[in-house]
Image (cartoon, rainbow, N blue to C red; front, side, top):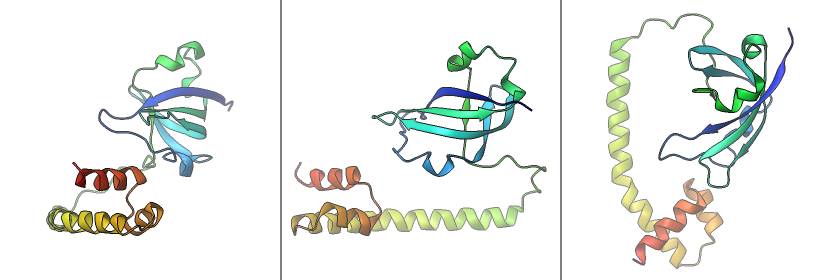
Length: 158
């Protein structure tokens, strides 16, 4: 089977952005792709996220499933996207609704706990910044991005 390199731009969902390293863990791996109704697998060769994070230029190696398409039209393929999760080889097993309900309730409790924790974390971030703790240390301690930490600290001064 012959392969072909394909480069296209994938846009982030409206209101969302890609981090600069969003695709790094997938380079060299087989990942699923969608082109309209077509589904398949491709190997991610390279990824370059735009500076604003709203899109990424992706280069993939693909098999013959797309060869009948004119390569000059790849950049305008309707709904061309690639993802991270593997395509299941077999149909998914039936869902255990009781387990789904338990997980749903747990998710809601954890979200409520997170919402309750957020103001305290915000104040601790601001206190650390005021005390002169380097931003990189705050980022490491919280898992927040530098931009998020800056936003939290800046909101205090408004």
